[in-house]
Image (cartoon, rainbow, N blue to C red; front, side, top):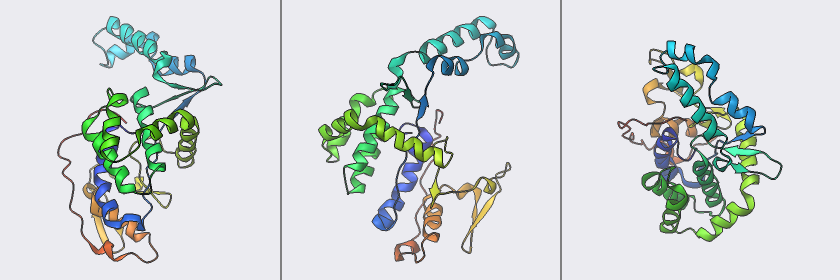
Length: 257
């Protein structure tokens, strides 16, 4: 997701690997969308049940039933706002977690990816968007970021207008194939990395890559992900011997994915 804070963090982690390996590894972004057939049922099922407000209050979700009823009513109203979705002629709706502007930006980033052989230029564009835009202002902010990195914004807009639905469907096919619902999810040759079994509740899990034992706290660092990618080669390139420094992620990500 283009504005998932954790997704943006992993882009910062992966960027040094991209710079190191270049086109020797096919590192490609995929985007998470939801397709909604029946908007009314979708919103009723996802906005909260007003008949359960007494239980929600008991469990500490709301201070009283009035707040609960008001919140659920607002959730339902916002969910039913069709302007929050990308609509199709057959009555289906496409959404992203952070609203319509995130869905729009997902598509623009896919269009930009498909329009350049120079993937470093794409990474520069996304880095600019992550630093300078938010999902609230992305629909106006993205264009300057694209221009600064050498993209033809007219071509991106044309791609969006003509190909948005087809591009979303391709992403849905991929996320469905690998059962992906959370951002970020990393797959190396179609296999989740790290596997769920590598995590322990006490944070002391570990995995072994070749002869190296990697602690749980190091799973999502540039060098660990580089090691995992390099282990997937039949013959690893010489760049794999380089040790990548960790990225400072001391600032906690906020928001949901």
